[in-house]
Image (cartoon, rainbow, N blue to C red):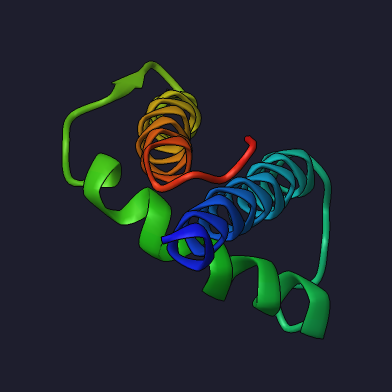
Length: 101
C-alpha cells in the first residue's frame, strides 16, 4: 500500500509540474502576441502547438471585448482550478495509502 501512496504522490508532483510548464508557455504566448514576431520561428510554432489545445475550447466562446481577447485569462483560471483539484485528489489518495505527503 505504501508504494501506491508514493505513486499518487508522484502523480501530484507530475501534474503540478506539467501545469507550471503550461502556465509559462501560455504566459510567453500572450507576451509574444503583443510583439512583432515571425510566426514561422520554431519557438513560436512550439508555443502555438503547446498552447492551442488549451485555448481552443475558450476561443469557441464569444469572449472578446473590443480588440481584447479574454480567452487566455479564462484558460489560466481553468488551468489553475484543474491543477488544484487534481493535485488535491492525488495527495489525498497518497495520504490514504500511507505516503507522507
